[in-house]
Image (tube, rainbow, N blue to C red):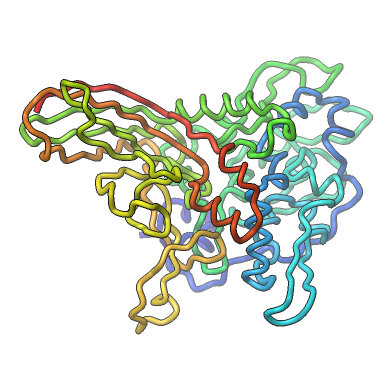
Length: 458
């Protein structure tokens, strides 16, 4: 059966792994150069839209080309693929730089000795602004809801959802229904690699949810308020441009504005995304959780191969002794999964409840006769398969813990639903192979999305 995402938006059929399609996926590899109408938010837009620019300055959109983890991954990716990674990462992170050819990959040397470089620093201000005001407000067409396959007008006209824009001396403005549509967001929030593996499926998750047609991405991530759209003009409905999601800046606090404020907003959003409850069955000797997803997409969502959402459970007996635990960390801060490459205590937490995506390289995809097992990989260009354990939107997951090893008695359980954007083992690997600053690891917050305490008898 064809998923509803493909029925609603046929373009998704090119990338949806649930469908069987023979046509090649469309990639953005070349694009016409942009006109000189692109200007920086702080040097141009802030004069008339100071609040919007202040919000944007602390957003993940403004941070997109300054993220140290992104920089390390791109540098390593170009070298590992000998430049074949091309514009896969930068087409979303700096649409202007990519389309103007500022991020073209160069090579110094030949063969295995070649050094492949993709510039992502020292670019023009428009490129360094990442996903800027003029990028979004120049988009006039989405071709495929994936991999930044959109068109940007070069006429200098600013497009938005205001139906009756006031005339102004700076630029022309027109109403754009696209800017009210989730496809506007989905074009960068669906990511498919060259092996046709969907690595980010946020928009697809929304399309297949009960929210499609009733709530948009903008409703939650760009909440509306009454304010002036531009200095000197009347009050109307405008939208927050902080684009709060799950990511925060991992730069030093002094190097990115709104450090604490943006972290507080992300924590509030994550805490509004799930409801946690639990109940014990003394006969079956189980503890069952109910984790209700309140978001308009899966939990977690986005770059789910990096993100971890898990349950920490600590059970104590009547004397306060810890008698059962799961979701606690090894000495390196990693979850105690079964993978010996990712924890110092593999297999020591068989009850672990972990939500996310595991990217795999499976030799059988290329050679069905291969007897080699699939192996986990860390970076977006590597997998040719994936397996995900996510909570779909509007779904309540009900995982259980087997407590049959505990003797009869009274117990207390402290339960937390936790989230972080990167596991330490990935960051340590980037430190070793790509020169990532070890201080970045300490800047990754672990957010407590929900917590409860339950007393029970077995």
